[in-house]
Amino acid sequence: MRIGIVCYPTFGGSGVLATELGKALAQKGHHIHFITYQQPVRLNGFIPNIFYHEVQVPTYPLFDYPPYETALASSMVDVIKNNNLDLLHVHYAIPHASAAFMAKKILELEGKKIPVITTLHGTDITLVGKDKTYAPVVAFSINQSDAITAVSNNLRDETYKTFHIEKEIEVIPNFVDVDRFARKPIDAFKKVIAPDGERIILHASNFRKIKRVKDVVRIFNEINKAIPSKLLFIGDGPERQPAEELSRELGVCDEVRFVGKQEQMEDIMAIGDLFLLPSEYESFGLAALEAMAAGVPVVSTNVGGLSEINIPGQTGYTANVGDVATMSQDALKILKDDTTLKTFKSNAAEYAKKYDISNIIPYYEKLYERFV
Ligand code: GMT
Image (cartoon, rainbow, N blue to C red; front, top):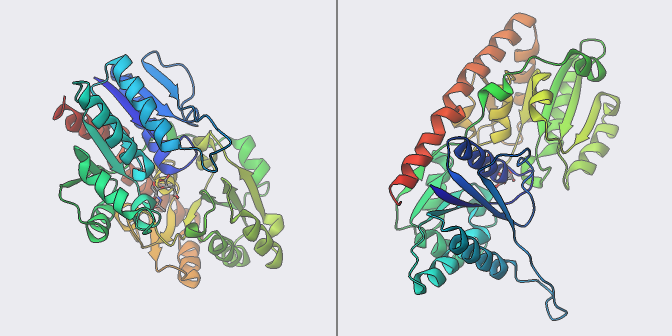
């Protein structure tokens, strides 16, 4: 099949998932055309049947806001026509679903039918999408999609609660390449971070408010009182500085390292002992799944889709949003001795296999086949 994929090219979970999906489909022989405003971060290396089309957004003095959505819809029309695409798969509803609707209508007038599949990822529904500034367009364009998928049962239910959706929303969960993440830790790297064999605690995100990054520091502070440990922050964003300030206030700044946005997540995850994700909401929690695939147990909140992937007492623990005390105690339960930690690690790695890329890609292929 010749498939167009539209996503955010940044480090966010939706872009990561869309890029990994495109790469996996290309490995299976499909022709994949990425239509984005930048090279997606995980789109590295040369894969012969992957094509990249950059959306150009020309500026003009009249535009306080360059019309990206118009440029995107025009690029979609151009790429679909010139490459005779069979299907367009857009990730994250805003503004991709409405741009796809516009492209579909333009092509219809020219006699070309292009099925549009929209995958909902989370904040496109639960935070930004339901804002009344965007809501009517989001609801309309989701309903106009030929198929709608959501990355967890929770996100499907939230979407039905938030909007009047007339179609079935199919759940296709996020996935991870277990083979890629099941790595042996690089000893030299581990030594740099934890020279005296301290436990290594990880957090990876875009450091937005919804991630409650300061709770990560608070939980770590409690862990660190009881167990020699180091905290590694991966990623960057608006809450990075407040987290840094809090780690200074609490006197743990020497144990905390910010390593910024990283591409080789598998090497970092491999040295971890525990992953913290105390978010206010997560439709799924892809970073937590990647940690689990690397054999790292997870202490997270119990919101959104997190309870679907993090099984209390098995792969880690879950607690209410803001309940730093419980999350700290749970972290200590996991980290208290080597035997317990080893059990949680192997449980996490085992459970992640359920979401291995090889199990999930066929669901997308079957979905596409219904329209092509
Ligand atoms: O976490 C973010 O804010 C980024 C956002 C995105 O769309 O890029 O992530 C969402 O999609 C991921 C992939 O499906 C999910 O794993 C994340 O849980 C979800 N984030 C939220 O729901 C806050």
